[in-house]
Length: 378
Image (tube, rainbow, N blue to C red; front, side):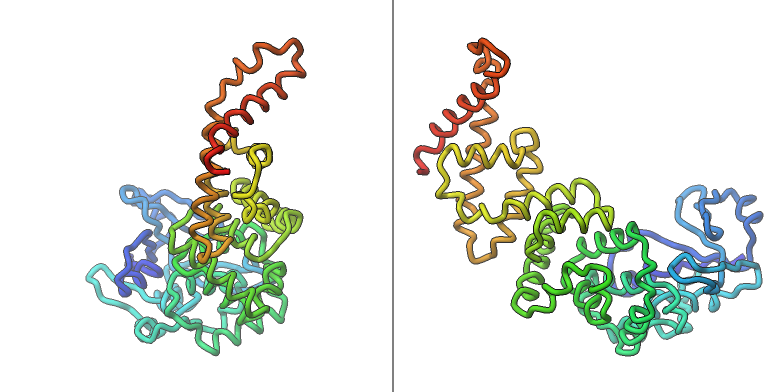
């Protein structure tokens, strides 16, 4: 049995990046031998095992054969006769098809080291075209390593995959997984550039394709996405800014989120931002009742953490040239929210003679608090 470190861990080590996860390929072994050695089986589609101490993943060397459309249309073959080179040949990119043995020797049959030096993403073999998820992965890796370029022949192969309808077989969960990971990388705009360059953006995210096609709108969208990355904002804010800067309406956001099965926290913030972003430039001119009504519409009193994310996303979507305004607007709304939260709702309800009067009494008390707090600002 021979064990090799493979894939992203080797690539990142060669690039000087921190290694997050270690994946290993085991050559010349069987599932029975792995279990006997104390490994725990976790693979559903092919034999993958967890190390009994480190819990790193160890996969038996395998080959794959395409039998149907989509990323699940494969027959996997594992045996003690499958070589390391055969296992590496089924991988997507040459930079991910490098292995390292226990002595630290690199095994690089597909010149991945040379492509790392040249900063190029190049497919290992024509078998790349058998898995449409690889299009998303190349785009996502481009957001993580923005100085890498996609090899022309790889881009052409991805275009052929799109034309053949392979991306139509992608399931929503996998699209969102890759999209979310790419949004969290250091330059998310590269992901969309790569998808558009191979014609994949239109079938995967048609709502964004037209925006990216318009030069000025596309440039603003790219700048906004890279700004949230530079600020190291969390995923809900990054997704909300993407939706708002693309000028999508709340119903369009809802449709997109349902199609991709976007998590609730990302969906809720994106819908709020797209629904109310037009009010952002008017904040400083709002009267106290308008401010309170705005806070109520945002459900800010019950969900202050989401409200804070809304303020951040709205400021980014407004544009970097309006920083002074954005700071003043955020401060005003935060001050108003603090006043509303400090209001004693119980005391306001004490003088009510009927339950239906309580809501109006609490509203009046909060309004009075906001008016008192914001008087110097208006």
